[in-house]
Image (cartoon, rainbow, N blue to C red; front, side, top):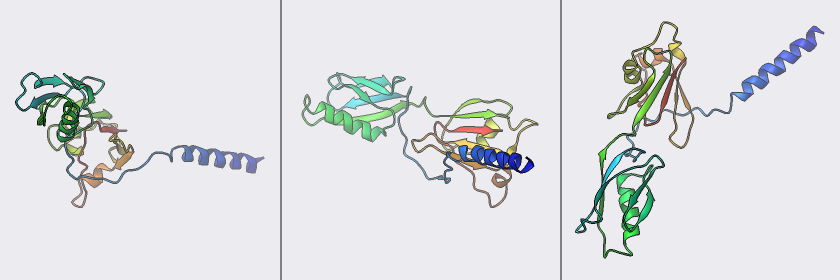
Length: 189
């Protein structure tokens, strides 16, 4: 009876561990990324020599913008240059050789979320390059009950996945800091 029970718990433990194995662990990539337009950003769309088509538009919560003659067009997830090319293609039927420029007037979508055992969990704006250590500082640091060596950065940049981080590694001389990206969630258990 004892062997059966031990075997049962061994199998149950393996099943539970295998259920957690589906989460992808990402390699830390701190390379510069081009700015991607996000929801709630405000854009200046300029069509050269056509003031009636040029305008300032907000990116709606569904990620689209509305431009005369082009109609609805997906803006979220594109770089300003990619959006300008898409608008240019849409305007070619109406405007001879359109020259379109897209400028991000207001950046409202770049946020990082810090949750768990920090003094002030919440959403924080990303202004420039923000490291994991800086985000933890913005959130007021760890609480007394935080497991600082069990931090996880959940990345939602299309590839998904998690980056496990040990605070002791971050503050060591050989440690590599994680540069956060818009939409990242930092979980401090």
